[in-house]
Image 1 (cartoon, rainbow, N blue to C red):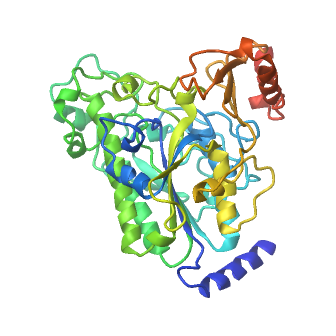
Image 2: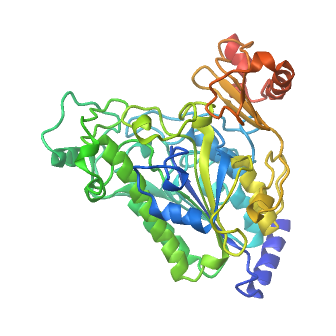
Image 3: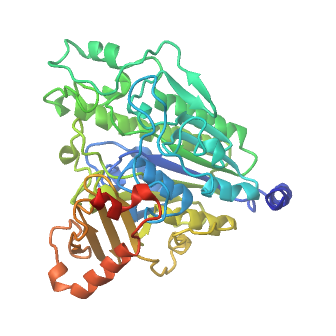
Length: 489
């Protein structure tokens, strides 16, 4: 009843407001496995990203922003709930089915008791949409986007299905959207030798319906349907997560000379021009974002829409990509799946006309779980209980901002790991599932952003403080996420 009354009051207030006074629209664009250094604005020299570079010129770049996790599902969970992975329910990619076409779809569902940004905004009269890759619960689960505050969903519910950009279906809310003419083929294949032509590759590993194109269409439809009321849209493109798949007209925007050998596949699908394909996927994503932003301008919504862009973690380690060639994470250490900087430090760009100075940047240290309280402060929404984040609205406004609580990550694969960012100090523990007494590695990011020099032995008091923060997260009440139980097993 309370929620209903708040919704009615908000709608009445919106109806009586001028456009200038209306609640801001919010679009959060989330790339998938895009590295810190893979945008021109952040130093990329090969991949072309003119739209996002212009977004940075029109808004603010964050140089010390962090994803919620080094992998997809838990990172998205921290973004939507404002809880870091020491407090969140989803702390790793946990599959609820297998890889075949008839396996159940989805990952560990987000609990119904969790409060997402969408649910936080609904009492204020916001229409909410999530388009793209979800990964927080499959069909008929409590984690389904429609059960987590989103009025409209279109895209992949399951991360495994998202490994193929030419799937047999996507999901529109609770119904599968069958893509006519596309037959199932595994997204993880290896060939023994290059095929005879690029046309043969596309005949075997492509189809008529490219999923990101359909997602863009859905996002444009969402804008059309909600142009006269406040909205919150998450546009979670699967790009540039593997497999290497992109329409041939985009591939041809990059020269043949980029590639000297074929990728024969194995971990993901093969491709005759892997470097060009990877670059083309990102450039096509950039173009799609440009189309989305152009539609905002066409509808006269630019002035009252906050646009945020980021990535769910760093560049993947999987074969088929070449992080060294693209200098994907700059001089940061590690890639996706690592709590070193290259796995979790990500670009973030925010554009908010009349509120953010164009062409500005900030070195304010922030993370995904800070997004929810920031949106709450901007909109006047009530922050849910149990949130770990701190609003970075002062940083957006260009005013002094005190540092929030130390940032904390835990990740349960690859032996188990933890990390803490406390001021300029970064502490990392590895192999926790195999040895409960694994030491804290300590790095001073003010002088060693590449985390090359462990200075733990020279700073025992700092190590003690960081270890206390890590230990305060143990043991977990959730059995699946208890490092102590991992060691015992």
